[in-house]
Amino acid sequence: MHNELKITDMQTLESNKKTTEETTNTISLNLPDFTTDSYKDAYSRINAIVIEGEQEAHDNYISIATLLPNELEELTKLARMEMKHKKGFTACGRNLGVEADMEFAKKFFSKLHGNFQIALEKGNITTCLLIQAILIEAFAISAYNVYIRVADPFAKKITEGVVKDEYLHLNYGQEWLKENLSTCKEELMEANKVNLPLIKKMLDEVADDASVLAMDREELMEEFMIAYQDTLMEIGLDNREIARMAMAAIV
Ligand code: PL3
Ligand code: FE2
Ligand code: FE2
Image (cartoon, rainbow, N blue to C red; front, side):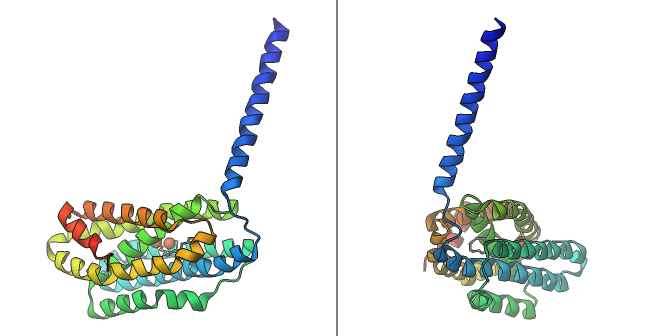
């Protein structure tokens, strides 16, 4: 009786071990080789985009606080998180032995950056929030959610922490726009018409490098659309308005 029990325990142990090994193998089969030159080459641009994006997000929240002085404390908190994200992603590049191509990344954001600056100068809070807290954050959320599935273990852990914050940032913009919807709807629609096509272009521009990292373009678009449409719904737009806004991506 005693012996029998022991055998059963051993068998359970053996079969558990096998399952673990099988799972590990399956996962590693789907992951790219992080040490190849082609992976590192693509990573030098994608990593730079993310680092630049986090820096600009920081600067944008600080700028938005000049338009919403009552929200200074909250916006400063968000800005601080962005600097932490930047540090995290810088460590991801260093961990893989990759030097980020920052010049490429600055160009990548230049058009959107310019539009944000113009809106800031004009005091167009709605446009600033749409660009940073909705479009850029939804873009980041889509990218990070897809990246988590194919990242190296070090970067995966960091990105998992970051993406949780990005939902808070998206939520911040969402709540402000929801409260002010009656007065900001027209500007929101107009700003979206101008800036959503830029996000689409940026996604197209990054798609080839992303695919080297095993990130699928369709999956990125899908994740973006989920975050984007979900937010517009929460803001209080109806189906027709959301469809109209999303259509701006088809240009
Ligand atoms: C807002 O908090 C940050 C904005 C960053 C924008 C990132 C866009 C990323 C597109 C490329 C996808 C690759 C993700 C890989 C991460 C190393
Ligand atoms: Fe961030
Ligand atoms: Fe963010």
